[in-house]
Length: 100
Image 1 (cartoon, rainbow, N blue to C red):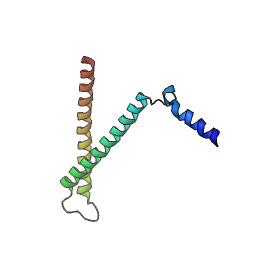
Image 2 (image 1 turned 180 degrees about the vertical axis):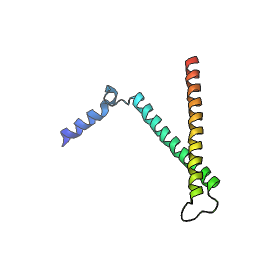
Image 3 (image 1 turned 60 degrees about the vertical axis):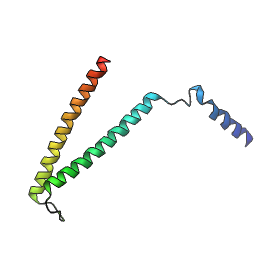
Image 4 (image 1 turned 120 degrees about the vertical axis):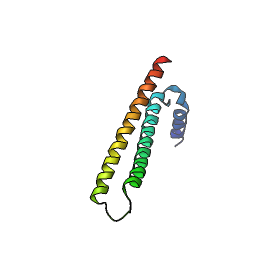
């Protein structure tokens, strides 16, 4: 069992040898994914909140036809405006990066 322990110890200690190095590119990708998920969750939360307040006067067990239409329209408009803002933001980011 001692041979295994020393093997593990030497393996563990060689983190600087490249095998244990963390890839910054991979970490950045993971962070980007996490940010995208958080943004999507926030978008959904805000959209639900705004459209619920706009469209549903008296909450009940089900949505009537006009409430369903209102929510569908509201969510469509919200997504359209979100996409417009996102595109404008991204193109501005790219312009600023190009000028750096």
